Image (tube, rainbow, N blue to C red; front, side):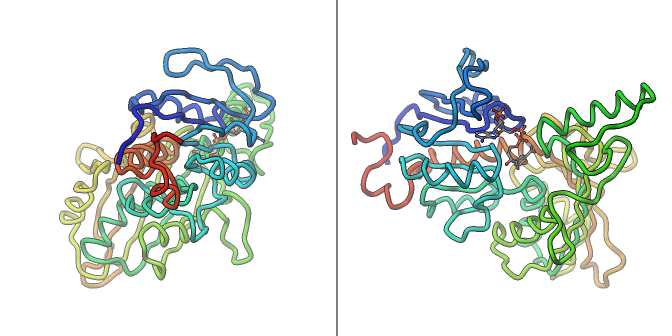
Length: 357
Ligand SMILES: NC(=O)c1ccc[n+]([C@@H]2O[C@H](COP(=O)([O-])OP(=O)(O)OC[C@H]3O[C@@H](n4cnc5c(N)ncnc54)[C@H](OP(=O)(O)O)[C@@H]3O)[C@@H](O)[C@H]2O)c1
């Protein structure tokens, strides 16, 4: 299928933590951009952002802003996505949405680039990028699913403040300064001070006692892995780390698996790096994963609480802003271009992208 050499790309939420990183990742990976539109709220209109080596003026994200756009990367929260993604798709753009607005819609593919890229084929103009905690978990679970089968997963997360956005980063910095100055710590973004603390509350509480973040890990993992019955439980904890989420994962496998064989399975997944040498204190760290696109796995060991070598415990770390959001969105965009699926499935036969209207 013919593709245009250059696409018109919009980034919605271009002034935010994820949006700015999306622009950076698009440039780093030399995504074929003809025109780049940077969109945000009315507050940012006229702001000049340096992107692709030139200054670009930020415009307001409105329905009209998507005219002529091929791919729109959304990262401005669920309300904006609910309102503007259908309008962007109706205008012919393909939306890759970072919010939770569309993830569990059965008509919307939810895609981790190295796990279920084939699901992109049936998109109808909106594609969802998973939650950052699910993103780094799915490729390693895929390795176990395909290698030995998965019966049950328990995951506890240690999530950085950048996962909440720019205001939360400023809040942690402010509380650290206040602590050093001996002043009271102001908490506005989180219900308690995050500095020197661990908060077992991410997103709102649901009727079942889990938080929405924890429940996203359950439901999104099932959808991405095509395991609708997967038994999974999660406790999500916010910790005073700036970038990268860490996860302690316990898996009950269907067939026996040694740690050595598990490391081999993990290392075979594109974008997964095994760092596991306890004798030299080598294991994944938030600080070393920050700024990287890979998912790091270590501390792989047999879980003796399960019989027959069917229990595996390990530690997974990844940069939540890059692979957890921006990089995966750009990888989806790259896959759409490579496979000729930039347009929605129902529009593809009618008019390949790049063909005259
Ligand atoms: N941070 C992460 O690790 C992460 C990971 C996965 C998914 N996400 C999701 O990505 C989204 C953004 O997260 P973030 O961390 O980048 O947040 P952020 O730093 O707070 O940035 C929010 C962005 O949204 C824009 N925005 C807010 N209200 C808007 C409106 N009414 N119309 C248009 N634009 C509006 C803001 O523009 P102004 O500057 O003009 O206000 C800003 O560009 C959220 O849905 C979040 O759940 C984040």
